[in-house]
Image 1 (tube, rainbow, N blue to C red):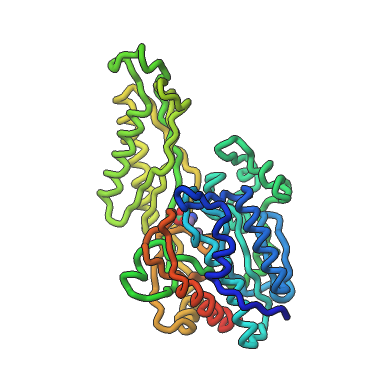
Image 2 (spheres, protein in one colour):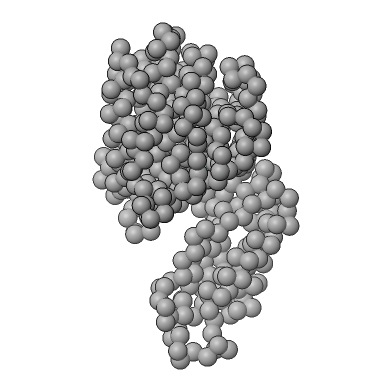
Length: 403
Ligand code: HGY
Ligand code: MN
Ligand code: MN
């Protein structure tokens, strides 16, 4: 069997230049873009170097098998796509750590009692087509193939065309019960995207749950016009209305303990310097541990945004684009991980993951690796080389203990 002396930090170094913006240090690796396709090819090559059997399923999920594909296998992995301007670890750490964990298990002479697979899910971030965890949602049937095929990216490319261009037949997208049955248990390792482990001075944690979170598209419509010939009192400027609504959203979220609301994408149309916009599209990410609070907050935003827009002579509408309820990981699997990673604290995740989608269908768990910056979805996301390398040893302990 091939062996490898690779390290997590060393493998991350090899992919560090892929999709990196030299000016900001942030990453742009949208699903099936050149950089992400390059990473997918790199992963397939690394899996091949380890003698793993690689297949890409109907939804574009890559499966690298140690042993024959079989129902009830032990599965680990994560994603390779990034948010715009994202960090180097969100996704790739879990994929790379899984490859090196296999190396470590082989060095220890581990003989799996069942097959193990490393998976790479496409479009976990939902940054290109707007739906988070798109690959795992298609796999589990949470997202219908028709709804998926209708999605378009910012340049108007349809998901169907982009997937076809990447060699994934859009006509075959859809629930895959056979593939899902192959997942006996799923364990995802991921960089921690907050300060939990810094404050606990611990290198790795076990995940307990993921906050419910959703995305809503807001459209504020006004009257497009000329910047020079339109007096201020004659305007129905949707940018001014939308800016006031963004402030309102922040206020309403701050009024609820533990709620989080974010507007990170704001697009006036047509977007000319000397043009009063005709409308503004912006997206709202809302999260809270209690789904009824999230829903209530969004309802309140919709009502108050409409009234505020009207006061500017504009119209505001909000439409849901993606929703993931609060989810707890499998308690029995969590206990098994607690035995295999003694002393590891247990953390709730404010970030969504494919493991959160799978958790509704198969026993799933997560491991989080310390991020000294406590920052994520930003170039400042960071993992010490030693913590990154150690994460593969811990993942090997967990996988070997579960095999
Ligand atoms: O948005 C999230 O929570 C995750 O990083 N996709
Ligand atoms: Mn992630
Ligand atoms: Mn992310």
